[in-house]
Length: 243
Length: 127
Image (tube, rainbow over the protein chains, first blue to last red):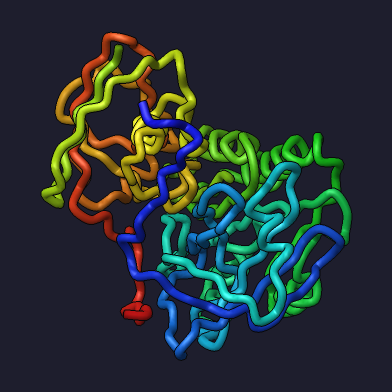
């Protein structure tokens, strides 16, 4: 057995991108976006919903942690990653300590929770807090496409300050996205999301052609998955990502 | 002691790890006692782009022997494996496949290169 104090430093087997922090945006007291500009003008080709793995040189070892890309592939100048502080989260603490101009290294893109083509049927997006990040480029892309199905967004947070991208979501609403904000205490967030999902997309009709994209933190995501699949939606029409 | 024999498609020399599952976790990524946890704890690098959180397939391994000694896969793991390149009937995500039998003998193959499940266009990374 190796000495557990001696960490395994992962040798990079994929292309490693070097990027500089171009700017930052504080969404609220504990949520921040970093806008990364790839050094030497490189670009990252990705699909809405994917993430990058950022190398975080912590005190005792370099860790690699995933951060979802909140910007669109069409936005080629910078890549936006959005994250919030979590108790004991060393990686996030490291990122919060970075300044504009600092350099980060990452690999990617990764992830199967992605929308490589717009579904033909109605799409329902369900997210909470920073989990709006992968959904944002998905909705942007669907809105930009000519013929598109009906879109709904059910977005939950403990308070309105933690509903991110509110101005942009208002524009989506004006463009026809059926937006429903949901404010609830953290302990009740998924109870409320499940109840609302049950009411709107299970009990309201017998249409089971919808596609769902669910993203969030913890087992509540799996509960929503089970609710939808159990109600008759096709397994592959219920996309989800649990962090 | 449980045993994992690790075969690398890349041609790297194979490794044999002996460990006591009761000592898990061995690292901080993946489920405690998972193949990923054991490998990382023994300084064997295995990609896990999502941090071992069952959100990608970069830790995909093919179990050649001892498949039944591993924990059962969850629906979440199965959903991801569906999208894994090179899927086989004995594929697992190393971050989720837990060994808790102290007499287990597992043989796993690390695929040569785990490619991205979904890509669009060509990335232009730094050389």
